Amino acid sequence: MSATACSLYQVGYLNFKRFRVLSHQTDPTNPIQARKIFRDQIVVGKSNFVDCASLIHSLSYKRAPHIAYELLQEIKSERFLPNNSTLSAMMLCYANNGLITEAQAVWEEILHSSFVPSIPVIAELFDAYGKMGRYDEVSSILDQLSFRNFEFLPKVYSLAISCFGEGGQLELMEATLKKLASRGFLVDSATGNAVIQYYCIFGSLDEVESIYRRLKGSRHLIEEEAIRAMALLYIKEKKFYRLGEFLRNVGLARKNVGNLLWNLLLLSYAGNFKMKTLQREFLRMVEAGFHPDLTTFNIRALAFSRMALFWDLHLTLEHMNRDKVVPDLVTYGCVVDVYLDKRLGRNLDFALNKMSVDDSPVLFTDPLVFEVFGKGDFHSSSEAFMEFTKHKKWSYRKLIAVYLRKHYRSHQIFWNY
Image (tube, rainbow, N blue to C red; front, top):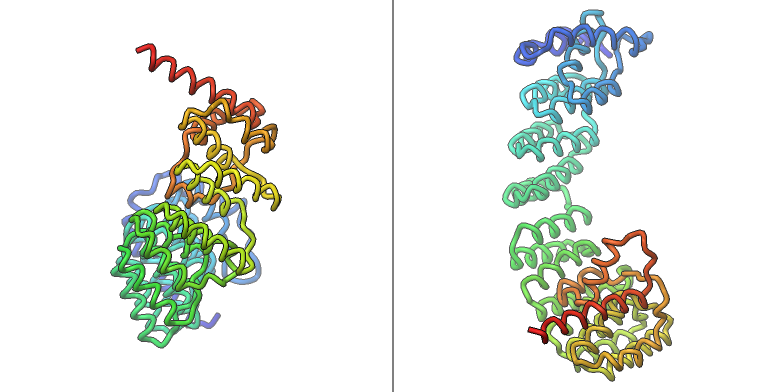
């Protein structure tokens, strides 16, 4: 460290003039505690700089920023200087405890020293400001770093975009994206996909589709989480046709996301109960070299169950057995619900005899399926049974027996009235 840098600290950070407000709030016992910590826990090497970042992190976790402040005062009084890690930890201690002014002061000292803030520190600082809704501070830090042309500047832009997006600040996020482009930086795939997810939460469907077109225009692939976010938005707005168009645009031949695209396409038809198209697209999926999984079969089973298409439902169960796809709670619910809804409970064993009813209940169906169909009565009741009697070892047979007793009892009460 040069003499110039040392003098900067001596006349800048170490006189702590900016922390007078904090010093007025200090408890009289804090200096004593800080002195004890300094003597017992800080090891001073040959360098004039002291690293007590871990201690300050611990004090921050204990909500004791004033003791951390007094610790730095003690270091100063002993004619030592805090290093980069210590300053960064102090800044985060202030920020995480809501002391914005003090955090800003330490940030200024870091910028005006020879130290360079690290990406993890900036990320945590943005996170702290975001939780407090201080997005103006995030913008200010971004502008300050932009003037210094650090090599990691594109990463800082991405962190700011994530901070704004998580807080629903779509206008600030768009402005940051424009600044990023104006400096000649490219939006990477991870950031582009994150932007889509933020718009899915806080924006409109038209805005999301526009962002997707921009991502595709930059030759980045939309990844699984962003696909799921868009699919959920289409489903919530009942735009099943547009969902199908989106999936075809993404490319049904993509295999790096497994069966997700095909399953969502089948779900778009099942949601509108377009049974012939559902069957046709299922065959196309198989012809394209994709192997139907549990979610694939359950999408069809749910559609058949709701439409009371018994024959198609039985064929689906046989197909699952032939492909060695193990049914889950949703599959059993499709069978139980349709038989009871049509008052065919006496024939329920006909279907259940072909299934492993002594297996322990599992649930592996993609949750997006429930956004379209909801949960059947057997499914919901079974989850409630298992939730309230966690100690009991359940099987499908036991769940069905309990559910049938509940079902028949409710019907008897109804007819008694």
